[in-house]
Image (cartoon, helix red, strand yellow):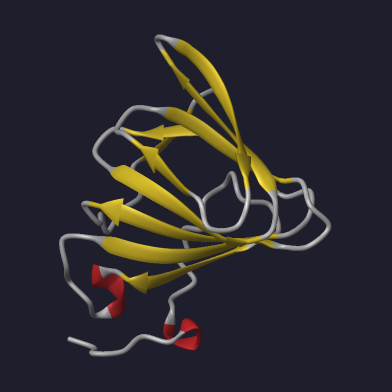
Length: 129
C-alpha cells in the first residue's frame, strides 16, 4: 500500500462521471489506486460554469470539503430542497440516497476534496432526472 499519494499520482478514472463537463476528478485514496481502505478520497476540480447534474448514491456516503473557489450545491430529499453556498473551508455531509448537485459559480476553479465511504470500484451514481 502507498504511504504517500500526490495529486500527480491520483487516477483520472476512465469512467469519469457523465455529469462532470470540463473539470477533473482524481482518485487519490481508492482501491483502484493501490490504497484499499474503507474510505476513499478524491480531488474534484470544477471550472467556472461547470456543473455536476443531480444524482444520488444508493450505497455511499460522501463529504465535500471545499478547498478553494465558490459554488452552489443543492440537496433534495423528502423534506424539500436546500441550496448551500460553497466557499473555502466548509464541509458538506451527503447521506446515502440524497439527491445532490454542484455548480462552480465563481471566476476561479472550485476545488473540492471528496471523501466517500465505502469506496466502490464501480461508481454507484444514479442520475436524478
